[in-house]
Amino acid sequence: MSEHIPIKPESKIEKTDVSAETEQNANRLKNYSEKDNSSDALSIENIRQNIEKHSLSKKENLVGDKEKTVTAQPITKEIKDLAYNKTLKKVRTQLPKSQRLFSATIHQPIVEAVSNIGAKTIARPSGIMGGGVFALFGSIILLLFAKTNGFNYNYFAFFAFFGIGFLVGLVIELLRKLVSPKNKR
Image 1: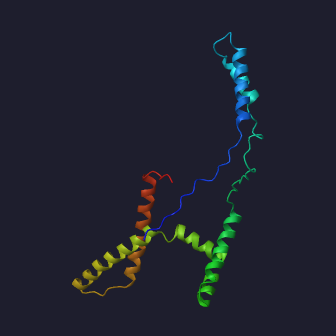
Image 2: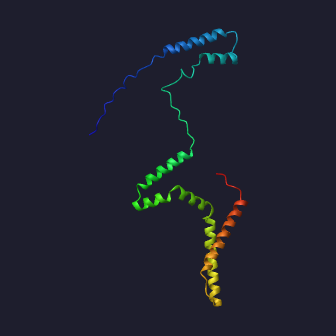
């Protein structure tokens, strides 16, 4: 069983009356051609004057409503602080009570300032890595040396090796930054 969809002719489309506008344009063209029968073409200045004379201004040529222009505000410290506090509050609502209290303590401005200073100066990744590697290999070598020569291993040596390795790691990072050019970001 096949179904047939009745085919209806398209509804009548409204035709806009552009004949008046077309007639005006034809009259303008006729006037221009009658004025300049003596010369083959208009000079550039005459063309510019005619364009300026007959063109619509910006206000007359608007289509629809005026669009709102949005100007970008510069991001200030206050805006950053508001966004940061809003994010902290939103995250804290999802945390258990003990973690919420810990988060409130850790994110105090004084604690964060000390932590940021420490992260930039003291706890450098290159220093920690250098200290760990130096302490590991130094302790292994000292332990083997102590076993073969018959004296006791001093556990303070691990911390001494770590401190020396930390300083070596910082010096290597400093030299690398001084020698290599800065990356453009």
